[in-house]
Length: 423
Image 1 (spheres, rainbow, N blue to C red):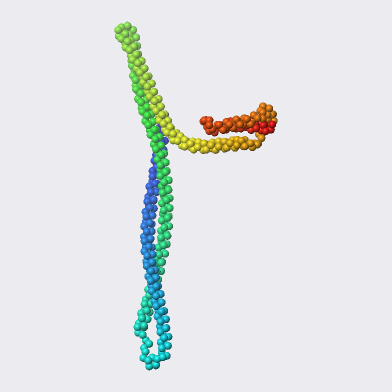
Image 2 (cartoon, rainbow, N blue to C red; image 1 turned 180 degrees about the vertical axis):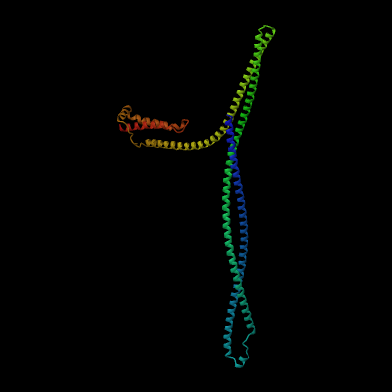
């Protein structure tokens, strides 16, 4: 028995070591997943920071483009106003030329030669307008080049923004996958912890049982050694007494010494008998203690089995409750269908609808026709209908009547009604 208990203890220790190795492996995997998750979070933060910087740069580019567009709009308006003014001046010049040509026909040649046709101020204004126009065109070309560069930078920034957003989505997906893996690992770790707790409980019970067995074994060995020593001493004493009795018998003298020896032998035999009885009593007590230890060991094993059976019982109770709920639903549907059929048939009987004839032997039909008169079926039907109408007022354990009695009663009523109609 001790070898079996040692084997059990070794098996439990091996299982506990295996569970500890699995737990350590899961813990290492969880730490690696946590480190990877932290690394991905750092990458995500860096990507978010870069995205914010790109957004700021793009916002600045958009503001600069809007300023350039405003400048271009102002220059376009100035150019349009200058062109309108130039066209107006051209029209005025042409009208003045026409008027001067008309007036020149009325003037003499001397006065015409004296008139100076060159206007210095107009020439200066024309030169200033031409220089301003060239300067505006140069500014417009430079602004267009700047606008093209800014648009290129904007396109590049938008493409970088798209790539960063895609990278951020990938990082988020990877983080979600890592979180899912972490939840799965946590669930597995919890399951392994529960299994390890079970192993610990089993190993604790096994260790307690082993300690109790070891104590009983030590006690039994001590008692055995004490009993052997006591038996050896008793044997030596008995041999001594035998030798003394033989010597006394050889002397065969009924002296006082012989009587004393005989009385001593009698007292020693009584003491030996009492010691033997006490030894037997002690052995019985030790056997009872050993049995009690075995009972305690069996009790601990049964407690462990009881805990495991209680867990299984909880699972079976949950399954049983689900099955009972399904059975109740099915039973209610069956009772509802049957009651609906009975109610429908009773409504047809009330309305006087002729039902389908029931197959039966002609001799039975004739016997029923002979037994019952024509009015008995109608009267009995009226009585049953009155009973049905009074039945809701009568208290009962169930509101719905039993299906078998209703079917038999309904079958009898239909037979009697059919016989009455045939007669």
